[in-house]
Image (cartoon, rainbow, N blue to C red; front, side):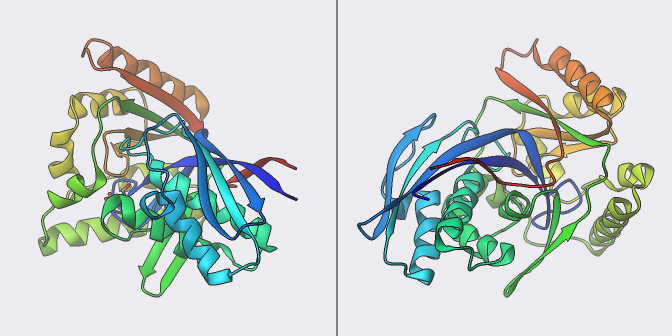
Length: 309
Ligand code: HSE
């Protein structure tokens, strides 16, 4: 094998109640990457289509993640990377993480898979940190593991894979404005009140239980965020109207996807997910802001191979 082409999916981090810990993987939106083995050692980025991003590996999230795994494994070959971005940077559905996790996942295949998924998340996080200014794994983990994940701790890294209820769909709107994760993090309070913290960790616990028991009602009742959403929603035009439209159309819950501006909802079944999509198009088409809407089943597998040469 000299070349591998992969699909590296978009992901939704935080999932309302689980800031920096919960995430899930999407299926209908993602980047494509071609990773090639080269005789010359080192990491090169040879092509970037669909976004203006740096080619120097040390300044590119895929490059930084690739260097992390290549430096650890120190193989007698090098790699070159082509990135075809379908996920816009600053969209809130894990654009930087898709590039970082795609690179390490594909390189692991070339190395003969010496690293397990958790170790790959560790390498991917190095790239993600470059983009957001802080290490967090809640986008990288669902991309590499697939389905829902919980980042139990960062140091040492521990990712818990969670089950994916079979009827669960996500509907996402991406208003075409850019919010930098680093900026969306800088506006958050450094401390939270005990009462709020109690609500939030109760919701994380019940959300996880709902995934294990296919309890859509409990899942719906757990999708709340009183800590981060009040601050970040101000950065997203028409956030409250979109959320209300999603819930009125039958979504189980809705919230900010990652650090925004994308807004996600979780729905029971594709029919409701499509109704939610129609409802948010109605809200957003009058705003004058361009937007994309995606309906996706939860992707339980994560990154996948498109072809090998
Ligand atoms: N948990 C991170 C944040 C995800 O919300 O800042 C960023 O994509």
